Length: 230
Ligand SMILES: [Cu+2]
Image 1: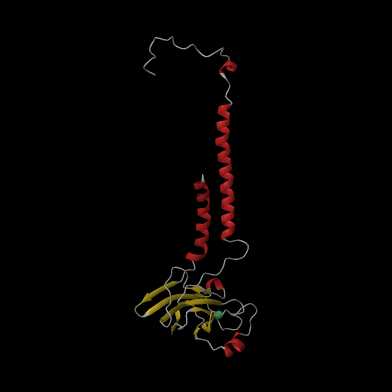
Image 2 (image 1 turned 120 degrees about the vertical axis):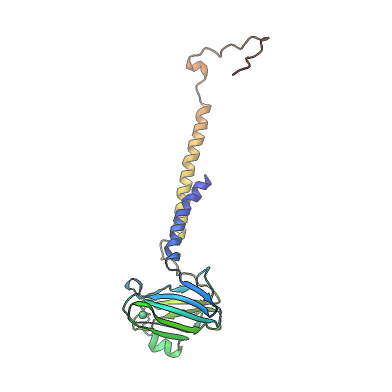
């Protein structure tokens, strides 16, 4: 019966995993020349990088200082940039931040930047640089006016993996687990109730005399051997 509860949990968690990891998983490949990553911008007409976090758990880790090549596909017709912050383990909040180019990048010149032309196509730009020598996470963002403020940013891990962005608040894995456990317990209670009820029922069976028999049938007289075949 514990198994039934587990089975109920599986589809929910598997569906959730499929929802955010498989579709947005970056292609990170290491060759003799270094690490190659496939990145796209403008998916669904939005101001986004896909993926917006790499490498994630289980993927090839970018070693400090090694050669990195990022093949960039533009899925729309809006120009963008791929601009890597020079600050390690620092995330500039994008919400309402319209001053990326006029203030932040003036005081913190980017580690690397490349323009992405506003023409749809595969490999419209190729970012090529040696990874920072300091292990940690590095924010990247778009310097086209208003794009960073609209959330066009992401994070690259060097020497580490970086997690995918957290699920939207309100509904997440815990909700699915709790719901699955509750459903499993309800089914367990119903099944247990059925089994116990059946046992109680057998104890309360009608005795023979109340079913019309006066007494039990007489036993075979002693001295005779009991029948061998049944
Ligand atoms: Cu942009």
